[in-house]
Length: 444
Image (cartoon, rainbow, N blue to C red; front, side, top):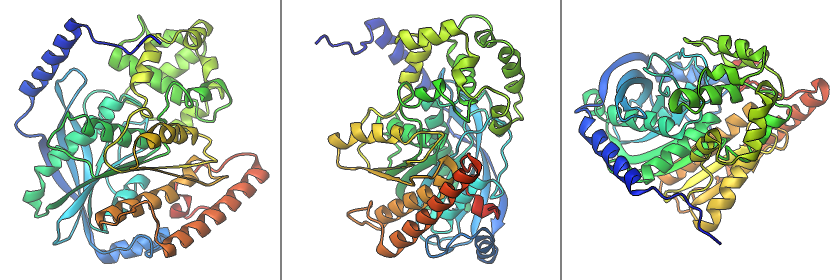
């Protein structure tokens, strides 16, 4: 069979070398621009917060008070220039060296970001920091006051946002009296699952020789962009924002279509999408999903849909392939979590990645569960499984994928109850539950 793998011509290799050299020459002396202490959380206040949000101490103990800093830093953009980006850092009051953890958040369309644990996903950072992790929460480029626009589901900018924030935070540690153990863990949920896997892959590519990953735990990410995840665009899908957000983002970063990008959408969606995604973006996906058609492909011109189906070298398809992440082999341990009932990012993305990686390495683990758990109700259990995986590695256990018997029983019981609730909710309403970490917000 003819080898069809793409080969860079000599000119391409020279251009790649020049870009890398330019990036090295343009690198700033310091990546940290500023950091500000925003909140100090005492152990008493966190214990009260744990009770209020019903976070079980037996699974996530509060061992330390925590300070939260807002960080502005310089990160590399796609053209090798450096831009301003933002994120937050949670630091435990620990006298011991701390592991580092980067948590990549899920999809945000609104550019506004709230520092602090009023943001549900930042509770996850706190869950790590109270147990002795320095937790980093990069906003992704273009969000929270950073420069440029966020490029949705783009592995390069996702990974660089986290890595350059890490570099900046390492310039801060000595100034605030903390230190690290040398262990770095990566995790994230939904888009953050894609981002954390992208970060793992980029670090192991050798592009950042001063950064080493200890382990990762991507959760419920769309790793198979041209396969399993793309199928959702041609059927009923409750989250149609995914498609225009992806198209607009890739056009902004890579200029894949000539002319006005909104012309590729059918009326009236061409004008509606232009209004929904205008900058600065203030709407989030729930509002946008309520306006767009539930079969996402129907908002795009028929001729482009047909080309996407027929032409594997369509520039948009090529770019999607560049950003899918199932087909590589990590060196450091990885555990992927997902739920069978996920109606937003199908668990088949995880199965596809597991099917490729597992025959090639023993360090990749898969944890699928939750027959009736849709995307958001799956999250709390995946988060706990991921933390247990990291804790086991931090403690030097030889089989980090093994969950201690007591915790395994609690999680099994919790999943069984959540499954039953989700099943009855669906039978009663005909719809899936969709509120991430609903119990933490006191909702039924």
